[in-house]
Length: 269
Length: 262
Image (cartoon, rainbow over all chains, first blue to last red; front, top):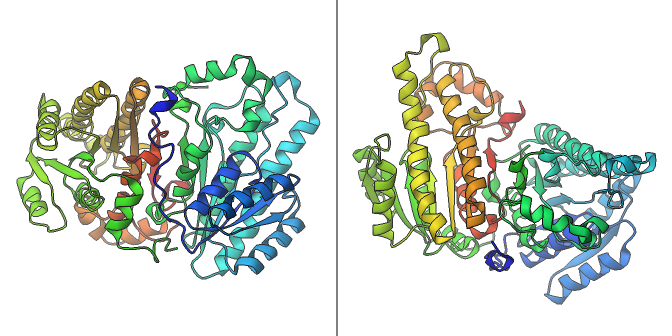
């Protein structure tokens, strides 16, 4: 299947999020930026979170404003609870409510090419951002969503490594498995007002991936051959799929995960 | 949370958003979930054929003003039934883009009390019917290089419910059959996925739910605090039939209000 055979690449946009507010973490780059842009295309007011890539976040806001949308930037290091509380205050002050939180931020140890290259620092960074950050965000925002009329929706972005593991960077797979534990636990305590689900994409051709050394050295071709659908899509191809979890169509889904990886997970670890 | 509150009527939303207008769809099984999904596809502007072995069910569907489709009376446990019904559906619709298989029964009793005939009956209705109709639809879709197939699994394909031995085995079997088909047909542009609802209030579960205490016990097992209704399955079925799910294949999507968390 060639990339030209992907009929969903530019689907007609329908305003599923008209009148809604959406916060996407790590939305200055990559998949997060595409989720934020897609949410805005579908009618949402969007809070674009960044930690250090302010220029990227501002570029995402500019893209949204260029199509007549509304967006703000919010900054926080999600490894610390105090920073998360401050950001939540800012979001509620700006929007009055938050309907959807997409916890997209994640560290994938992209510099690491082999499990043998594990360092204490790389392990700590992944655990701090992916595990502590996602848990604290889900905890703080979930609790606030419980208190607002209408509840809310939380989507935690995982990865196909929740099925396959990661021989390249085991700490990354460990952190993404932790996201399932966070999702299931908070789905249960926050039900039914707040739904919590994991979205698990496979490899996507983000700028970060395209620049990765192993990607340029043949990994891309190997992965395409291992993906039953034979395609590594651009992130915008699955951004709408991710947001579907926060729509009414998915009203009875909570605590689950949705894989969108072209069947990559089925091939086995 | 009502995301569609401010939007136009239901059929307007689905017509535009899902891109299913004009899609040619076969729904195998006209039970509570099958019939509700068939109405959902019609509301999305699709052309729909529904197959079931119970003519009375089909008559009820045809008499329903919200169902503007065709029906075929067929017993999908018979050899060759899948090819026959898919052939008829293609003739009626002028092609086939989506197959939804939702044929199933349950037979609740302890493992030690099942006869071999009772075991075989559940397997034939739940699993064999799934094979014969998805194989036939897959043959057509692989040749045309596109299509979406969805089978109706259950949380019983994952959880070990007492009194559910053949039902659970058939649903677990459907999941694995689905995954192998998904793998084999992915390069031909055909996606194959499963929907796995928790308890849904249909004729299949009605008698069981009437037993004293059963409803309360089951509701306590669902974090969402309620049992599912057939409408809960419609959105996910339409989603997996649409271009928005083009990169999802081989997946079991649970629609259970968190039931599998407990």
